Image (cartoon, rainbow, N blue to C red; front, side, top):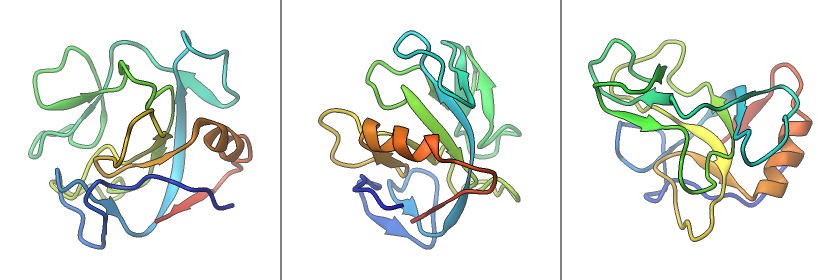
Length: 145
C-alpha cells in the first residue's frame, strides 16, 4: 500500500543521527500500536496511551530509544501530546535491534497533524490513511522509507 506522507523536515538519510530531523531510509518492522483513549474508542490491537508515557531520546542513557514512564529525569519525548500527532501511533523497528546510541530514537508512524510541514524523523500519514493501513497489519509488516 502507498499513501502520501510527511517525512523528516530535513529529508531522508541513510546515515540517521539523533536530532538531525531526517527520516531514516530503510525497511522498518512495524510494532506496537498506541492510541489516545480520550479521543477514540479502542483501536484493534492497540494499547491506550497514558499521560505518563514517554520515550527516552537521551544519548548515553541506558534507556535510550526505549519507552519510559514520566516524570523522567533525562531528555525524552512526551507521548501524550497537545496536538493530534500521537492520537494514533505505531512504533517502528528503527534502531531497535541492535540499538546503537546516537543513531536516532523515537522514529514512529503517526498522524499528520494540522499545519505540519515536516517531522523530526518520523513518517506521518493522514489519520484516515493511517487507520486504513493499521487495520490491515498482519504479523511482519514493514514500513519502507
